[in-house]
Length: 458
Image 1: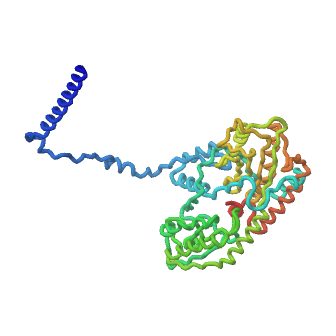
Image 2 (image 1 turned 180 degrees about the vertical axis):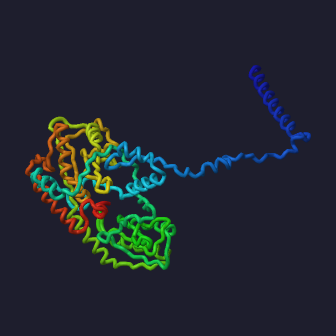
Image 3 (image 1 turned 180 degrees about the horizontal axis):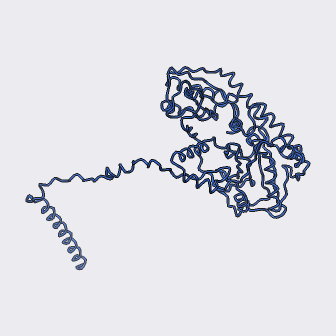
């Protein structure tokens, strides 16, 4: 017990010493301190911030380009490459010639973009198989050559390229060159047009900020154009131009269906808001009549919305998706943004590249799927008939490419019912195609025309 008692006493003494030391430290800290010289300084100083950009650097960033400087431009797709003599002549041209060449090139680039071919089955109509279409390929080809001898085919393959990121939400603003009006887009064949009478001339700079709601009405495109007194022509509203009158139009139908009452009301509300902001008077159409016109146009489009499909079937082992991608890319076909199909483009009479037909490999997505593991025995070539101009002989091109694939890949060309396509089957195909082309022509919207591309699109 003596040792235990001694340890207890020692612990108590140690605890008292610690408490006493702490009290001594507290009292020492509370003693008054003599004033030091540095106590006269302010407790903190404002930070000194040096300018990030010097004035001369900022001015240099906004210096105008040299008078004769031609900005570098990315190469664009064209129907035929420039030869060496033309390039040398362009490099030696004066500044005026360079500006004129640049204006011509911009005019081509500003042409309406090519309409995409619909993947799979379209909303309108049914996909027409090649089974019920039969005719001699050579005889029909001879007939088409005699009928369209005046149209020169331009079938130069397009260099493969990856399509850019989607930019379909907002349509590009029209570009006017040398004060000339850009081509009008609104067409009474497929648009409901509302005239807007301005009290006085208005500039495009004032009108454009007010057209934010005039892009789409539901699933239907909306366009606005102005009447320029200098050119006496309608054109898409462009900054820097003065307009006497305006017209706003909503598309009556597309592959999403006919214009309905809700979309018409949305369009009318946007037009009324624009008219009020511009102090203009609008001639609004009757809703019942407009909706009825949309349904009639939609019924016509459904009767003409046809896709022709031919299939390339392997005679042996299945193909890997990687092999199909390699073949399509080497043949100049372009992969779509969603990765589900390849598209063959062809230049039209104006030199603008248009979609001709598509290539699909089952349900393969060439951007997301494992192309080495994905395999199949069938390649499908689809021709969107209303979107391809008759003068380019699109079905002939599809069949020629299908036969080329079959020979190179050890396969055969068949219809949707897996029956081989014989020479006699092409006569009926061209006959039915001619009937469809005549029907579109009689309506004033031939296959591949701008109005047809708008009607048979989403």
